Length: 307
Image (cartoon, rainbow, N blue to C red):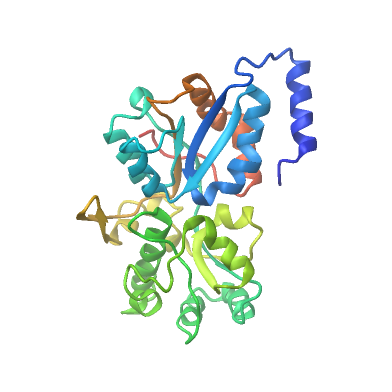
């Protein structure tokens, strides 16, 4: 469900009826967030909090790890940071920028196989939901165009490869990940996160392994994947999801990383230009109203401990 002008006016009237006086009127605050969250941030929680507080919302959506590096280097300034997965938030925390030293979970998601309704493979993918292994055969078809993001800068790009690695083990198909993805950094498949689903809608690529929340927000068709490979099941996190691993380049050095649950974390930043609005926005995301908006846009509940 999209937050419309009518719903924003209704919310404004409700706050006025309750005697609410915006304390942050005419101020501004900036939120840097994982690019996949563009719809829920720019049409949902951002405008809703703007109505509630009077502060003007501004959003920056890009690859989460890339944003983390810019924030840590202070070449990008924001009031709030919301990445998906823990690693980008930990990078900002290591730079001493997380206010009060705490980031809180605000939503969750899972990996799904989203496909273009314009793809010649659309009907085959739609039918693959009845057979957990069938989608792997479709993705290996000659001429199939898979889209993903850069695993060196974006968690979503990492989770595509993690999913394929675990599918290779689960389905006992040696070589599956390389057969579908090629090298980890495959320029023929890699696009920026904000453009990826737009390319899918236009039929420029056939499919992507992406976040269910973003796919629902963009109203794209998809099939769900088993819990063993979709990173949504807490019971499988420690002993199963951790079997996947990637070597990525981070600030000129290589390191091996492992996946965890797909959780979105939010934190007000120490160098926020508007610290009151920043903390108020984080609190709003965890409130009943904020959580209801996340649910409307296809996100799962906040889960797991604070960072």
